[in-house]
Amino acid sequence: MNKERLGNFIGDERKALGLTQRDLAARLHVTDKAVSKWERGLSYPDVTLLEPLASALEMGVEELMACRRQAAGAEKEDETVKALLDISGASVKAEKRRGWSRLAGVLALFLAAALGIFYTVTFRSNQNESVIQLKETVDGMDYIYIKDTTDPGHLLRLQCGDGVDFDAIQTTNEYGEEGIYKMSYRWNRWTREGTLTACEFYGFSLGGMMDVTFETECEPLFGYPQVFHTTENYYPDPYSEPRGRGYLCDARFWIEGPASGGDQSKRDTILLVEDCMNAVIYDWDGDGENEVVVRTRWPEKPYTVYDMADGETVESWPDTVPEEVREMLVCIWEQ
Image (tube, rainbow, N blue to C red):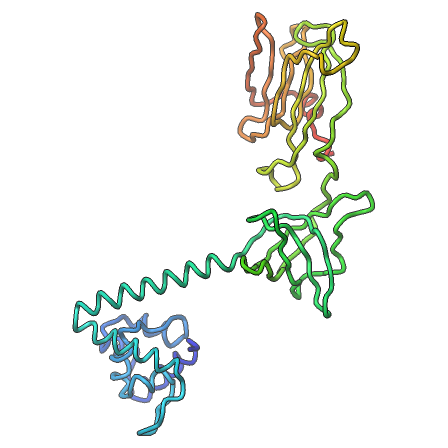
């Protein structure tokens, strides 16, 4: 039933009887604000008030629910209205019989909970940044496919809404980098189909970043004359802001023995920092020997300094570092 239609009908019938909203509210033992909300189509009357409301307006409940006065003996045309009338009658009678009231309340809560669970489980809405796996046009309708974030082994098929410029969407650019888009969409989890309501270009991802190992460098560190270091094992940071634009890596520092011949399988790792954004060698404390300054993934503690004391690695967490070091720690995808 349309709220506005019911509200207009209640208002018209109330005025025809010469009643004010306060008069009607007093007869129903509710506030005049509640009556105002009904008449403005903002809410429905409670089901237990249908019979008292119809009586106050000098009509039957079926006339109230049909939003029109009916001739005597007229047949009810709408089965949905009939069902609602049955519920209404049962609810009103239940107020007179407390046992039925409890049962009706439990059933109503159960039904509402079941419908709520079904709706929540079936239909989902999301806003995030994502790459587009595929775009296609079928029977004149434009669709895109993206990964299902709730089940990455599947794709969502989203029909483009009126506000989406389908022709402007790029899945990749000329360098093979994937386009990232800020999206708003709604879909059915069972069919994995839905509607894309907004799609704004954000940028391009760094293709192949997870397979990158940067060039090995060699510098004095921790008193060693030659320490090799590189960053490796890049992977997307699932918690970066904005999502999907940050990467984490491992920073490895090692020395090689005279017999290694450059064989990295024989290298001796002296420091491995995992899940960081970047790392550089720098004389942090000005003692003439280099330390390792790491840019962490944590915005609350963005820097860690690693030093060596008595053969043991020690670390500190400064709140800031010099501008020169911050520039050295800028990641490649931020440049």
